[in-house]
View 1 (cartoon, helix red, strand yellow):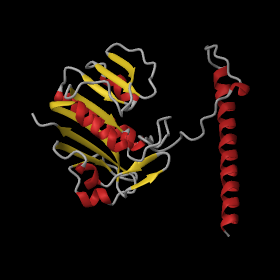
View 2: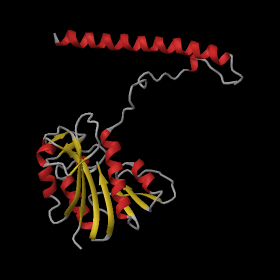
View 3: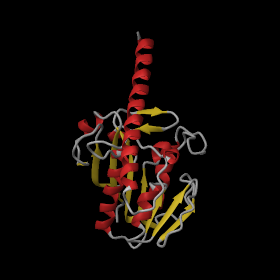
View 4: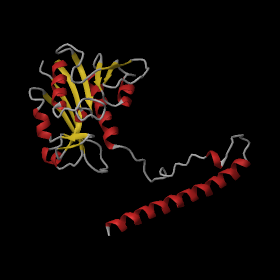
Length: 252
């Protein structure tokens, strides 16, 4: 029965694709007729088509983790207004945009050849950061720790890699400095070799001694609202693959 369901699903997907391609062909012919009546001299040729058949939707879809967590972090930095910000391997889009408003030093295990005013893009290993103890006033490391030690990005296999990386982040954070960390939260597990998912309470324990200034949860699913600030522990633990946004501050 499962085999037949798989076959039926494949047939349905093929038929749906064919129907959408036929609708695109009809739309192309209409566009061609209208273009022929226009004074514009743009070439229109079916052989040069580039069909985008999945974008005609009622709403614009987006990756909730990767839209909401940089938006959360940017708002924190807007409140903090640091003289300089250091980011370790977070979203390139986040670093690129924030660098328009404050100097950003971006470090990645696989350096990114970004060339933008206000942004320095350099290489660093999160397990051996090239900074003095207590030297960085503003640091972010978002959707990164869960990957360390799983080999996904060419890094060495190490089941304790994420904990070692946390110790490095704590080491370089200056007194009174802020650290923004984002990881998957909910039902704890390793989904090799993609990422880990953390239990909220366990994750907090690894930052013991730092103040949790703010926590925001991006929940599972397609909830209509954005991040849930100060989400209770029981709600975080219910998630299968939620997104936890943590703002820590070191004692002054």
